[in-house]
Image (cartoon, rainbow, N blue to C red; front, side, top):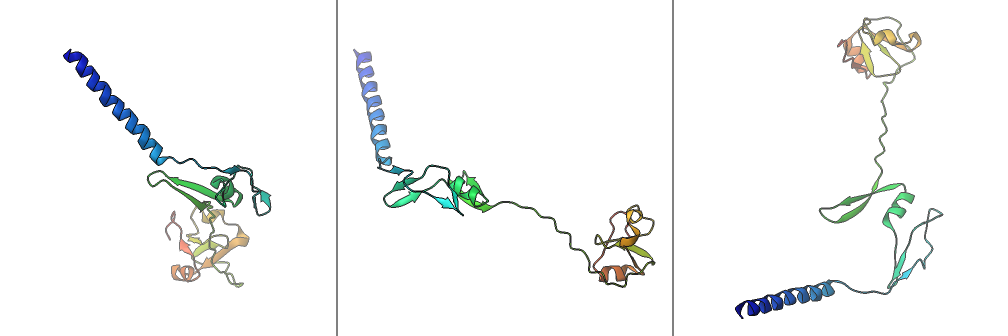
Length: 157
């Protein structure tokens, strides 16, 4: 008899737990009436290929489709449940070239090129690769640096 009573109590407790979770789940969900694909959406003249939802006077659109049409990336932070639209990481390496005057020396102590911002000892392996028409010569390190050139990391002038 005791085991039957214990089974009955356990059954009642489990039923209460299960029924309360159903009631709890019902409390956080909400049913709404929406209209799918009622609105035609364009971005910069191009049709958005994705479902949209019209609810209560507001049109909801697919974030990723819109971002891609704007040449953007969509990010997601799982820790904060945050979606973001960001500029794409476009890396453009621009090498600032030194300003070279028309009076280019044809001899000196150090040599550079009009195609980069480095100066070298004439015996440097990189100096040997400089085309004659691109050479620029300096009488001192200070002169090279004043014109925007930096010392070579290989020959360390």
